[in-house]
Image 1: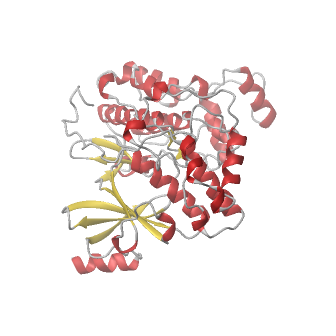
Image 2: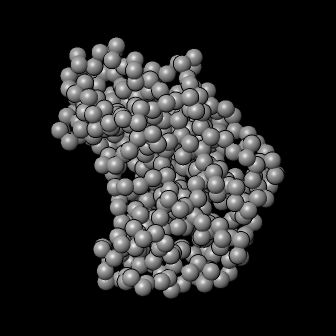
Image 3: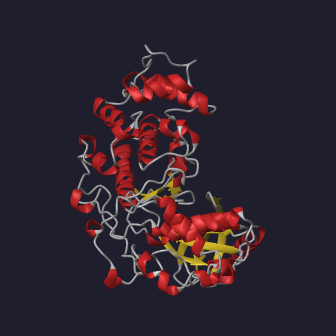
Length: 430
Protein backbone atom coordinates (compact mmCIF):
# COMPACT_ATOMS: atom_id res chain seq x y z
CA UNK A 1 0.00 0.00 0.00
CA UNK A 2 2.82 2.39 0.88
CA UNK A 3 4.51 1.72 -2.46
CA UNK A 4 1.26 2.48 -4.28
CA UNK A 5 0.90 5.72 -2.34
CA UNK A 6 4.48 6.66 -3.23
CA UNK A 7 3.76 6.02 -6.90
CA UNK A 8 0.69 8.25 -6.73
CA UNK A 9 2.75 11.02 -5.12
CA UNK A 10 5.37 10.63 -7.84
CA UNK A 11 2.78 10.72 -10.64
CA UNK A 12 1.36 14.00 -9.34
CA UNK A 13 4.77 15.51 -8.70
CA UNK A 14 4.54 15.57 -4.89
CA UNK A 15 7.96 15.85 -3.26
CA UNK A 16 7.60 16.00 0.51
CA UNK A 17 10.39 13.66 1.58
CA UNK A 18 9.58 10.58 3.63
CA UNK A 19 7.38 12.11 6.31
CA UNK A 20 4.08 11.65 4.44
CA UNK A 21 2.98 8.24 3.18
CA UNK A 22 -0.01 6.50 1.59
CA UNK A 23 -0.96 9.27 -0.83
CA UNK A 24 -4.38 9.02 -2.46
CA UNK A 25 -6.12 11.35 -4.94
CA UNK A 26 -8.64 13.55 -3.17
CA UNK A 27 -9.64 16.40 -5.48
CA UNK A 28 -8.72 19.78 -6.89
CA UNK A 29 -8.66 23.13 -5.15
CA UNK A 30 -8.80 26.44 -6.98
CA UNK A 31 -5.03 26.88 -6.91
CA UNK A 32 -3.84 23.29 -6.95
CA UNK A 33 -4.19 19.53 -6.65
CA UNK A 34 -5.16 17.89 -3.35
CA UNK A 35 -4.06 14.44 -2.17
CA UNK A 36 -4.76 12.72 1.11
CA UNK A 37 -1.82 11.27 3.03
CA UNK A 38 -0.79 9.99 6.43
CA UNK A 39 1.60 12.11 8.46
CA UNK A 40 4.05 9.60 9.94
CA UNK A 41 5.04 12.04 12.70
CA UNK A 42 1.55 12.59 14.10
CA UNK A 43 -0.01 9.38 12.69
CA UNK A 44 -3.01 11.37 11.47
CA UNK A 45 -4.57 11.50 8.05
CA UNK A 46 -4.24 14.85 6.34
CA UNK A 47 -5.08 16.58 3.08
CA UNK A 48 -2.12 18.05 1.20
CA UNK A 49 -2.70 20.78 -1.38
CA UNK A 50 0.09 21.40 -3.87
CA UNK A 51 0.43 24.93 -5.25
CA UNK A 52 2.75 25.64 -8.17
CA UNK A 53 4.57 28.97 -7.91
CA UNK A 54 5.39 29.41 -11.56
CA UNK A 55 4.95 33.14 -12.11
CA UNK A 56 4.02 36.41 -10.45
CA UNK A 57 0.29 35.77 -10.69
CA UNK A 58 0.43 32.31 -9.11
CA UNK A 59 2.78 33.68 -6.47
CA UNK A 60 0.30 36.44 -5.63
CA UNK A 61 -2.61 34.03 -5.30
CA UNK A 62 -0.57 31.60 -3.21
CA UNK A 63 0.69 34.36 -0.94
CA UNK A 64 -2.84 35.62 -0.40
CA UNK A 65 -4.28 32.16 0.28
CA UNK A 66 -1.53 31.20 2.72
CA UNK A 67 -1.73 34.56 4.49
CA UNK A 68 -5.46 34.14 5.01
CA UNK A 69 -5.66 30.49 6.04
CA UNK A 70 -2.80 30.77 8.54
CA UNK A 71 -4.70 33.37 10.51
CA UNK A 72 -8.24 31.95 10.42
CA UNK A 73 -8.87 29.73 13.42
CA UNK A 74 -12.45 28.55 13.88
CA UNK A 75 -14.39 25.35 14.46
CA UNK A 76 -16.20 25.70 11.12
CA UNK A 77 -13.12 26.35 8.99
CA UNK A 78 -10.81 23.60 7.77
CA UNK A 79 -7.75 23.73 10.00
CA UNK A 80 -4.34 24.26 8.40
CA UNK A 81 -1.50 22.51 10.21
CA UNK A 82 1.49 23.88 8.30
CA UNK A 83 2.80 25.13 4.95
CA UNK A 84 5.85 23.33 3.55
CA UNK A 85 8.24 23.66 0.65
CA UNK A 86 9.89 20.95 -1.50
CA UNK A 87 11.03 17.86 0.43
CA UNK A 88 9.01 19.03 3.42
CA UNK A 89 11.12 22.15 3.96
CA UNK A 90 9.81 24.65 6.47
CA UNK A 91 9.05 27.76 4.45
CA UNK A 92 9.63 30.14 7.36
CA UNK A 93 8.02 32.94 5.36
CA UNK A 94 10.44 32.54 2.41
CA UNK A 95 7.81 31.59 -0.15
CA UNK A 96 9.59 33.44 -2.97
CA UNK A 97 12.56 31.05 -2.97
CA UNK A 98 10.52 27.99 -3.99
CA UNK A 99 8.69 26.83 -7.10
CA UNK A 100 6.06 24.88 -5.17
CA UNK A 101 4.35 25.00 -1.78
CA UNK A 102 2.31 22.37 0.08
CA UNK A 103 -0.55 23.25 2.41
CA UNK A 104 -1.02 20.47 4.97
CA UNK A 105 -4.51 20.66 6.38
CA UNK A 106 -7.21 18.78 8.19
CA UNK A 107 -8.62 15.77 6.35
CA UNK A 108 -12.40 15.82 5.94
CA UNK A 109 -14.38 12.71 5.10
CA UNK A 110 -16.61 14.16 2.41
CA UNK A 111 -18.06 17.39 1.06
CA UNK A 112 -21.59 18.70 0.70
CA UNK A 113 -21.61 18.21 -3.08
CA UNK A 114 -21.09 14.47 -2.66
CA UNK A 115 -23.82 14.28 -0.03
CA UNK A 116 -26.24 16.10 -2.32
CA UNK A 117 -25.53 13.64 -5.12
CA UNK A 118 -27.43 11.14 -2.98
CA UNK A 119 -30.50 13.38 -2.80
CA UNK A 120 -31.83 16.18 -0.67
CA UNK A 121 -31.10 16.34 3.04
CA UNK A 122 -33.62 16.15 5.84
CA UNK A 123 -34.68 19.58 7.03
CA UNK A 124 -32.97 19.07 10.39
CA UNK A 125 -29.65 18.22 8.71
CA UNK A 126 -30.03 21.17 6.32
CA UNK A 127 -30.78 23.49 9.24
CA UNK A 128 -27.82 22.17 11.24
CA UNK A 129 -25.41 22.60 8.32
CA UNK A 130 -26.75 26.07 7.48
CA UNK A 131 -26.23 27.16 11.07
CA UNK A 132 -22.61 26.02 10.99
CA UNK A 133 -22.09 27.65 7.58
CA UNK A 134 -23.34 30.99 8.89
CA UNK A 135 -21.31 30.57 12.07
CA UNK A 136 -18.17 30.14 9.97
CA UNK A 137 -19.09 33.05 7.68
CA UNK A 138 -19.65 35.34 10.64
CA UNK A 139 -16.07 34.69 11.72
CA UNK A 140 -14.62 34.93 8.20
CA UNK A 141 -16.37 38.22 7.47
CA UNK A 142 -15.36 39.65 10.84
CA UNK A 143 -11.76 38.96 9.77
CA UNK A 144 -12.39 41.21 6.71
CA UNK A 145 -12.18 38.24 4.33
CA UNK A 146 -14.50 37.33 1.47
CA UNK A 147 -14.48 33.65 0.51
CA UNK A 148 -15.71 34.37 -3.05
CA UNK A 149 -16.21 30.73 -3.99
CA UNK A 150 -18.79 29.24 -1.66
CA UNK A 151 -20.37 26.14 -3.19
CA UNK A 152 -21.17 22.62 -1.96
CA UNK A 153 -17.81 21.27 -3.17
CA UNK A 154 -15.97 23.71 -0.87
CA UNK A 155 -18.04 22.85 2.20
CA UNK A 156 -16.68 19.81 3.99
CA UNK A 157 -18.58 17.47 6.28
CA UNK A 158 -17.62 14.99 8.96
CA UNK A 159 -20.39 12.41 8.77
CA UNK A 160 -19.38 10.96 12.14
CA UNK A 161 -20.22 14.05 14.20
CA UNK A 162 -21.99 16.18 11.55
CA UNK A 163 -19.50 19.02 11.78
CA UNK A 164 -19.32 21.35 8.78
CA UNK A 165 -16.17 23.22 7.78
CA UNK A 166 -15.58 25.80 5.07
CA UNK A 167 -12.50 25.13 2.96
CA UNK A 168 -10.56 26.10 -0.17
CA UNK A 169 -9.69 29.77 0.26
CA UNK A 170 -7.90 29.87 -3.09
CA UNK A 171 -10.12 32.72 -4.31
CA UNK A 172 -10.54 34.47 -0.97
CA UNK A 173 -9.85 38.18 -0.77
CA UNK A 174 -9.00 40.60 2.03
CA UNK A 175 -11.34 43.60 2.08
CA UNK A 176 -10.94 46.15 4.86
CA UNK A 177 -14.40 47.56 5.53
CA UNK A 178 -12.95 50.93 6.56
CA UNK A 179 -11.99 51.75 2.95
CA UNK A 180 -13.48 51.75 -0.50
CA UNK A 181 -11.99 49.02 -2.71
CA UNK A 182 -13.78 50.07 -5.87
CA UNK A 183 -11.47 49.58 -8.82
CA UNK A 184 -9.16 47.22 -6.92
CA UNK A 185 -11.37 44.12 -6.84
CA UNK A 186 -10.89 41.53 -9.54
CA UNK A 187 -13.99 40.14 -11.18
CA UNK A 188 -16.15 38.17 -8.76
CA UNK A 189 -15.07 34.58 -9.07
CA UNK A 190 -18.02 32.83 -7.46
CA UNK A 191 -19.15 29.76 -9.43
CA UNK A 192 -21.91 30.90 -11.80
CA UNK A 193 -24.82 29.08 -10.12
CA UNK A 194 -24.05 30.69 -6.76
CA UNK A 195 -23.36 34.16 -8.12
CA UNK A 196 -25.46 37.05 -6.86
CA UNK A 197 -27.31 39.38 -9.26
CA UNK A 198 -25.08 42.30 -8.26
CA UNK A 199 -22.05 40.22 -9.17
CA UNK A 200 -23.59 39.41 -12.56
CA UNK A 201 -24.24 43.10 -13.22
CA UNK A 202 -21.05 44.56 -11.74
CA UNK A 203 -18.35 41.87 -11.47
CA UNK A 204 -15.78 44.31 -10.05
CA UNK A 205 -18.00 45.78 -7.35
CA UNK A 206 -19.03 43.55 -4.48
CA UNK A 207 -19.07 43.09 -0.71
CA UNK A 208 -19.37 40.33 1.89
CA UNK A 209 -23.00 40.00 0.77
CA UNK A 210 -21.88 37.84 -2.18
CA UNK A 211 -21.04 35.03 0.25
CA UNK A 212 -24.47 35.32 1.85
CA UNK A 213 -26.22 34.97 -1.51
CA UNK A 214 -24.23 31.79 -2.15
CA UNK A 215 -25.16 30.51 1.32
CA UNK A 216 -28.85 31.06 0.54
CA UNK A 217 -28.56 29.13 -2.72
CA UNK A 218 -26.81 26.31 -0.84
CA UNK A 219 -29.58 26.13 1.78
CA UNK A 220 -32.23 25.88 -0.95
CA UNK A 221 -30.19 23.12 -2.58
CA UNK A 222 -29.95 21.18 0.67
CA UNK A 223 -33.71 21.43 1.21
CA UNK A 224 -34.70 20.42 -2.33
CA UNK A 225 -31.80 18.37 -3.69
CA UNK A 226 -31.52 20.59 -6.77
CA UNK A 227 -29.69 23.79 -7.64
CA UNK A 228 -31.84 26.86 -7.15
CA UNK A 229 -30.68 28.80 -10.23
CA UNK A 230 -28.84 26.66 -12.79
CA UNK A 231 -28.39 28.86 -15.84
CA UNK A 232 -26.39 27.66 -18.83
CA UNK A 233 -24.69 31.06 -19.08
CA UNK A 234 -24.65 34.37 -17.22
CA UNK A 235 -27.57 35.89 -19.12
CA UNK A 236 -29.77 32.89 -18.43
CA UNK A 237 -28.60 32.92 -14.82
CA UNK A 238 -29.85 36.49 -14.47
CA UNK A 239 -33.13 35.62 -16.20
CA UNK A 240 -33.76 32.77 -13.77
CA UNK A 241 -33.06 35.05 -10.82
CA UNK A 242 -35.38 37.76 -12.15
CA UNK A 243 -38.20 35.24 -12.53
CA UNK A 244 -38.10 34.58 -8.78
CA UNK A 245 -36.38 37.40 -6.89
CA UNK A 246 -38.29 40.72 -6.70
CA UNK A 247 -36.48 43.93 -7.59
CA UNK A 248 -37.62 46.48 -5.03
CA UNK A 249 -35.29 49.45 -5.26
CA UNK A 250 -35.89 51.96 -8.05
CA UNK A 251 -32.18 52.32 -8.80
CA UNK A 252 -31.98 48.57 -9.46
CA UNK A 253 -35.00 48.71 -11.76
CA UNK A 254 -33.47 51.61 -13.68
CA UNK A 255 -30.21 49.72 -14.11
CA UNK A 256 -31.97 46.59 -15.37
CA UNK A 257 -34.03 48.65 -17.83
CA UNK A 258 -30.78 50.12 -19.10
CA UNK A 259 -28.72 46.92 -19.43
CA UNK A 260 -31.46 44.34 -20.11
CA UNK A 261 -34.27 46.20 -21.94
CA UNK A 262 -35.23 43.09 -23.90
CA UNK A 263 -35.97 41.06 -20.77
CA UNK A 264 -37.55 43.55 -18.37
CA UNK A 265 -40.06 46.37 -18.57
CA UNK A 266 -41.36 49.03 -16.23
CA UNK A 267 -44.34 46.79 -15.37
CA UNK A 268 -42.26 43.64 -14.89
CA UNK A 269 -43.11 41.30 -11.99
CA UNK A 270 -41.71 37.97 -10.79
CA UNK A 271 -43.31 34.91 -12.36
CA UNK A 272 -42.43 32.29 -9.76
CA UNK A 273 -41.67 33.60 -6.27
CA UNK A 274 -39.73 31.36 -3.93
CA UNK A 275 -42.92 30.01 -2.35
CA UNK A 276 -44.05 28.65 -5.72
CA UNK A 277 -40.60 27.63 -6.92
CA UNK A 278 -39.97 25.63 -3.73
CA UNK A 279 -43.37 24.18 -2.75
CA UNK A 280 -41.78 21.46 -0.61
CA UNK A 281 -40.07 24.03 1.67
CA UNK A 282 -41.94 25.23 4.77
CA UNK A 283 -42.95 28.85 5.31
CA UNK A 284 -40.33 29.61 7.97
CA UNK A 285 -37.51 28.43 5.70
CA UNK A 286 -39.00 30.45 2.81
CA UNK A 287 -39.05 33.57 4.98
CA UNK A 288 -35.39 32.95 5.82
CA UNK A 289 -34.47 32.48 2.16
CA UNK A 290 -36.38 35.59 1.12
CA UNK A 291 -34.30 37.66 3.54
CA UNK A 292 -31.02 36.20 2.25
CA UNK A 293 -31.79 36.03 -1.46
CA UNK A 294 -32.49 39.72 -2.03
CA UNK A 295 -31.69 41.40 -5.31
CA UNK A 296 -29.92 44.31 -3.66
CA UNK A 297 -27.07 43.35 -1.30
CA UNK A 298 -27.99 46.24 1.03
CA UNK A 299 -31.25 44.43 1.87
CA UNK A 300 -29.59 41.06 2.50
CA UNK A 301 -29.06 39.55 5.94
CA UNK A 302 -25.49 39.45 7.18
CA UNK A 303 -24.17 36.19 8.61
CA UNK A 304 -24.65 37.54 12.13
CA UNK A 305 -28.23 38.57 11.39
CA UNK A 306 -28.91 35.21 9.78
CA UNK A 307 -27.85 33.41 12.94
CA UNK A 308 -30.51 35.40 14.82
CA UNK A 309 -33.36 34.43 12.47
CA UNK A 310 -36.06 32.18 14.01
CA UNK A 311 -35.20 29.43 11.53
CA UNK A 312 -31.81 29.08 13.24
CA UNK A 313 -33.22 29.19 16.78
CA UNK A 314 -32.75 25.45 17.54
CA UNK A 315 -28.98 25.93 17.34
CA UNK A 316 -28.47 29.65 17.96
CA UNK A 317 -26.04 30.41 20.77
CA UNK A 318 -24.69 33.99 20.41
CA UNK A 319 -22.09 33.59 23.15
CA UNK A 320 -20.59 30.70 21.18
CA UNK A 321 -20.50 32.39 17.76
CA UNK A 322 -17.11 34.09 17.89
CA UNK A 323 -15.66 36.78 15.67
CA UNK A 324 -12.04 37.28 14.69
CA UNK A 325 -9.92 39.04 17.29
CA UNK A 326 -7.26 39.90 14.70
CA UNK A 327 -8.99 41.04 11.48
CA UNK A 328 -6.99 41.82 8.37
CA UNK A 329 -6.37 45.49 7.60
CA UNK A 330 -5.60 47.56 4.54
CA UNK A 331 -1.86 46.95 5.08
CA UNK A 332 -2.39 43.25 4.33
CA UNK A 333 -3.66 44.06 0.86
CA UNK A 334 -0.65 46.10 -0.21
CA UNK A 335 1.56 43.04 -0.76
CA UNK A 336 -0.97 41.67 -3.25
CA UNK A 337 -1.13 44.96 -5.14
CA UNK A 338 2.66 45.24 -5.27
CA UNK A 339 3.00 41.70 -6.59
CA UNK A 340 0.35 42.26 -9.24
CA UNK A 341 2.23 45.37 -10.37
CA UNK A 342 5.34 43.21 -10.61
CA UNK A 343 3.42 40.70 -12.69
CA UNK A 344 2.22 43.37 -15.08
CA UNK A 345 5.72 44.77 -15.50
CA UNK A 346 7.16 41.23 -15.96
CA UNK A 347 9.47 41.49 -12.97
CA UNK A 348 10.82 38.14 -11.85
CA UNK A 349 13.41 39.08 -9.22
CA UNK A 350 11.44 38.53 -6.03
CA UNK A 351 14.44 39.55 -3.92
CA UNK A 352 13.61 43.16 -4.71
CA UNK A 353 10.83 42.86 -2.10
CA UNK A 354 13.00 42.07 0.93
CA UNK A 355 10.51 43.47 3.41
CA UNK A 356 6.77 42.98 3.37
CA UNK A 357 4.27 45.73 3.99
CA UNK A 358 1.98 43.14 5.60
CA UNK A 359 0.93 43.70 9.18
CA UNK A 360 1.68 40.00 9.84
CA UNK A 361 5.44 40.54 9.91
CA UNK A 362 5.48 43.40 12.36
CA UNK A 363 2.93 42.09 14.84
CA UNK A 364 3.76 41.73 18.50
CA UNK A 365 1.18 40.53 21.07
CA UNK A 366 1.68 43.58 23.27
CA UNK A 367 0.87 45.87 20.34
CA UNK A 368 -2.43 44.31 19.39
CA UNK A 369 -5.47 46.57 19.76
CA UNK A 370 -9.05 45.60 20.17
CA UNK A 371 -10.90 46.03 16.86
CA UNK A 372 -13.33 48.48 18.42
CA UNK A 373 -10.44 50.79 19.31
CA UNK A 374 -9.15 51.12 15.77
CA UNK A 375 -9.98 54.49 14.25
CA UNK A 376 -9.60 55.28 10.57
CA UNK A 377 -9.20 58.64 8.91
CA UNK A 378 -12.28 59.15 6.67
CA UNK A 379 -10.14 61.31 4.40
CA UNK A 380 -7.85 58.37 3.67
CA UNK A 381 -7.20 58.00 -0.07
CA UNK A 382 -6.57 54.39 -1.13
CA UNK A 383 -5.11 55.50 -4.49
CA UNK A 384 -2.50 57.67 -2.75
CA UNK A 385 -1.63 54.92 -0.26
CA UNK A 386 -1.13 52.33 -3.00
CA UNK A 387 0.85 54.75 -5.15
CA UNK A 388 3.18 55.44 -2.25
CA UNK A 389 3.57 51.73 -1.55
CA UNK A 390 4.47 51.02 -5.17
CA UNK A 391 6.89 53.92 -5.19
CA UNK A 392 8.55 52.58 -2.07
CA UNK A 393 9.06 49.24 -3.78
CA UNK A 394 10.69 50.65 -6.88
CA UNK A 395 14.13 49.79 -5.50
CA UNK A 396 15.18 47.75 -2.47
CA UNK A 397 16.86 50.74 -0.86
CA UNK A 398 13.58 52.67 -1.15
CA UNK A 399 11.93 50.39 1.42
CA UNK A 400 13.89 51.04 4.66
CA UNK A 401 12.88 49.33 7.86
CA UNK A 402 11.98 52.58 9.53
CA UNK A 403 9.21 53.11 6.96
CA UNK A 404 7.35 50.02 8.12
CA UNK A 405 6.59 51.11 11.65
CA UNK A 406 3.43 52.95 10.63
CA UNK A 407 2.02 49.98 8.75
CA UNK A 408 1.36 47.75 11.72
CA UNK A 409 -2.23 46.83 12.47
CA UNK A 410 -3.43 43.27 12.34
CA UNK A 411 -2.36 40.37 14.48
CA UNK A 412 -1.72 36.72 13.67
CA UNK A 413 -2.19 33.87 16.04
CA UNK A 414 0.92 31.77 16.39
CA UNK A 415 -0.78 29.15 18.54
CA UNK A 416 -4.30 28.43 17.27
CA UNK A 417 -6.53 26.83 19.88
CA UNK A 418 -7.48 23.19 19.71
CA UNK A 419 -10.71 22.20 18.04
CA UNK A 420 -13.50 21.96 20.60
CA UNK A 421 -15.07 18.51 20.53
CA UNK A 422 -18.75 18.44 21.49
CA UNK A 423 -21.88 16.60 20.52
CA UNK A 424 -23.16 17.87 17.17
CA UNK A 425 -26.76 18.29 18.20
CA UNK A 426 -26.03 19.96 21.53
CA UNK A 427 -27.87 23.24 22.00
CA UNK A 428 -24.73 24.75 23.51
CA UNK A 429 -22.75 24.21 20.31
CA UNK A 430 -24.75 23.66 17.16
